[in-house]
Structures are given as C-alpha cells and as structure tokens.
Length: 438
Image 1 (tube, one colour):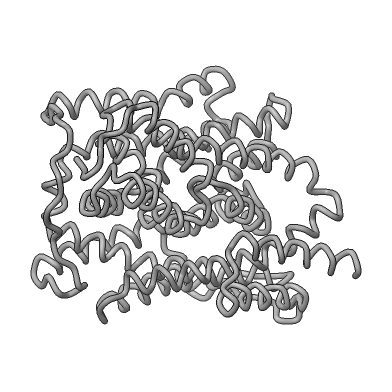
Image 2: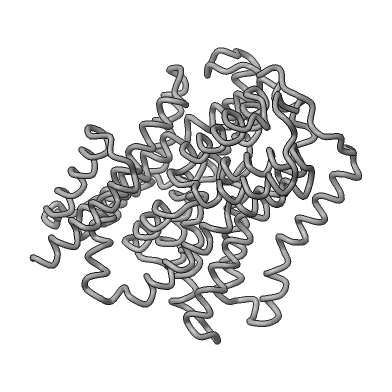
C-alpha cells in the first residue's frame, strides 16, 4: 500500500505507542506527527492515502486524529491494527488526565493549586482563539461559508440554539447546495488513492460490525444500571456522552460548546470555571483533546457519588465517559472504511463536510466568547428578551489580573510564536505569582 516496506505488527505497535505518548498540540499537531512518522520517515503510507484517510475521518463525528490513526492501523494490519492504533492513541492521555483529575478534585481547595489554574484559564483563552483562527483559515473559502459561520454563531450566542441542530442544518445546506453548485462552498470530490485491504464489505459486514461495537458501546450502561440504579449520575453520563459521540462533528473545540452548555447550564454537573480548568488540563496531556470529557465525567461523578466513595465514583465516571466517547469511533471506522472510495468521490458529501466546517467556525467563536466572559469577569448573567438569551458580563467585575495574563498569552502565541505547552506553563507560573503576591 506504500512506497516503503510493509511494517511488521510489532514495529507498528512500537510506532503507535510512540505517537500516543508524543501526540501533544491538538488535532493539527497530532496529524502532523502521524504524517512525519508514517509518511515522511517510514513511508508506510503514501501521501495520497494519508490525505484520503483524513478526508474520510473529517466526515465523521468525534476526534478526527484518533480516527485517522485507527484507519491507517486498519489499512496496515486489518482489524487488529486499527484496534491497537486507536487504543494506543488514547490510552496514555487517558491515564494522565485521570491522574490530573484526581489531583484537581483533591487539591482544588488549596490556595496554590487554585492560583495555578487562574493562570491556566487565561492561557486557554489564547489557545481557543488560536484554534478559531486556524480553523477559519481552512474552512472559510467562499462568502457562503462566511455566511454559515456568522449565522451559526448568532444562533448559538443570541438564541442558545441546540448545538446538534446547528451542525445538522449546516450539513444539510452544504449537501443540497453543493449538488446544485459545486463551487458554492469551494469543494470538489477527491480522486486517487490505493485500494484498502480486502474486506467482505456487504450486509453481513455491516450487521457484524454494528452488533459487535454497538454491544460494546452499550455494555457499561447495561452493567451499571442494575448495579447502581438507572437514575444515577452514571447512567446520565452514559446517555449524554453517547449522544454527544453521534452529533459532535468538527473536533474537540466544537464538542466543547455542546458539552459546556449541557454540563454547566443544563445538568449542573460542573461550574463554568471547572469546565475551563478541564480544557487546560487536556491541553497539557498527550492524546485527543476530547479527553477533556474524561475530566468532566470524573468531576461530575466525584461531586455526586451516590452510594460510592467520591474517588471511586470519579474514576468510574471518567472510565464510563471515555468508553462511550471512543468506542463509537471504532464503530465508524470499521463500518465505513471498506466504502471509503465511494465516499471520497461524492462531491455532495464533501459539501456537507464544508458546511459543517463553516458552522464549526461559528461554534468555536461562540466558545471563545463564552470562555472570555467566564475568565475575565467574576460575574456573568444570562439576559433574556423574548427568544433572545444572551450571556452578558457585569462590567464592574472585570478581573484586571486575568486580562493581563490573557494578553501575555496572546502575545506569547501570536507575536513571539511560543508553543502552546510553554505558554500554558508560563501563564500558570505567572498566575501563581500574582495570586500569592496579592
């Protein structure tokens, strides 16, 4: 399938483990790392095959970098290759975020620990703005795309429209309009690429794949329900994050808007500041950024443990959330990979993806505004007027120190081009110093 020698399974295992341990920097950095390791250095995958797989994964809900690893692993060694590649991409980061979540839950009351996160929150605002600019540059190619982005932002910010509805509407508009005018969003069907491994891609394949991965997806809830009860935080987490796994197109930053709105405002599992803290932790760990959901599951269960000890509840909530978030990713890849050649040559599906991509810009802009308000102001209110429901700050509560640190983070990332992780460390140290001196 490539210009280089096919790797042994053991060689591939070591490389996937290396990628899982070094995959910092969000989807862009992770995809670049895989490209360097698999295409440039080892030549296990051709350039067109790599881009082919990336286009396919961009059509799917969930973390595209983890799904790309799973897809390439499948192409190299079939089912076991995809399983190992996807698992190793997630597992190191999961253990790190679990340890950090435990520390956060047990140390949050200490002044020095809270001061570290004061600085991290300001840095996270800069990271999200950087992601907004990067995605906008890639996704907004026509006036129509800009229009979809603006309308998506207004629907979320002014009317608090449901995130899944915004994404669905953008995808449908992109699909229908691209069928009529392929240049409307600046897309075209892709061509070329090598043939995937031989797979019995028929009705039997669909039934077996859906039954196997669908059963694994539902298994934790079917065990926990009779054990701890069906009306507990655990079944609520399983149901909510299973739903999220189906509708969250556009990567982690798009998903965070949906999760923040539900976890903070609808369910009351977390406070706004805790959601931002979780993103700061996820930014400093390897693996998919969507591992921030592991933190959400941990803290939600830790704070409402029911019959379990808080730490045990937190770990169960974290594992449950991670399971129902990532098991569907394997389902999408193993179900759809044999049909990828048909998908990539469909211009209308590319249009749906372009529409979703444009909407994601509006989604991330809404997330940026939400983070900015929660970070820079001590009090934020929701002002309602008819169908409008706008989150608005109390300007008298502007935090000057938080604003200063946010400016420092912006300068570090945009002017000095300091990396994300060093910027997070710099702002954490600065926040600690400011709070301890104050």
